[in-house]
Image (cartoon, rainbow, N blue to C red; front, side, top):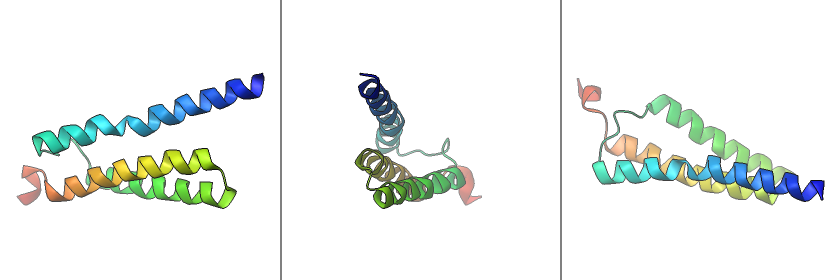
Length: 92
């Protein structure tokens, strides 16, 4: 019973931290503006997501892999959008 509760807690936590990036990605796509996104932070976050996914693969832990593959995809999309739509101040 307790193990099931912990798994549910982990699933909800993974869902929250994974899908929190979806509204940001959609906002950037819609507005084509990224001035509120730090290139360095997004780059490090994306690398971290890739490493977490690799860690999950090494452990053969599917929940870690799945959550971080989705997070990586969203983080990478935001990173690509940041590079595609640089902040106006970046050109100065």
